[in-house]
Amino acid sequence: MDRGTVGSANRGRLLVEVRAEGRSEVVTPAGELDHHTAELLSAPLDKALERGRTRLVVDCSALEFCDSTGLNVLLGARLKAEAAGGGVHLAGMLPVVARVFEITGAEAVFTVHDSLADALRD
Image (cartoon, rainbow, N blue to C red; front, side, top):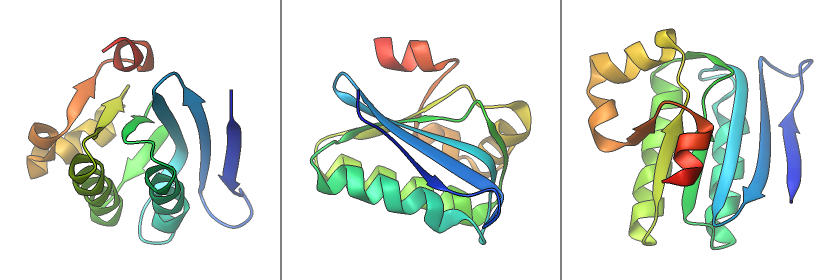
């Protein structure tokens, strides 16, 4: 299993872990995803796509906050993944993050799973 972590508690409020799990690239952001930390998530998503990993699973279970910049990072990754024949799956969203997707209607364009295990089984 390939594992990597980007980000730092000292640099910002977001840590991102990346690992390969079968045919999926699992990206786990932990903390706050906003305009200050968005690059910490967009970089590993882009790198995964560059390596040909088109099924991206974002484990949102430790994501405590997501603003419009974070939402745009995920929407951009979705467009790139779909253009390459894949997609972005969101898993385990906390209610505060799920609400952002509900309000904006973005939940309709993602495949959303209750848990990471569900996303990996799909």
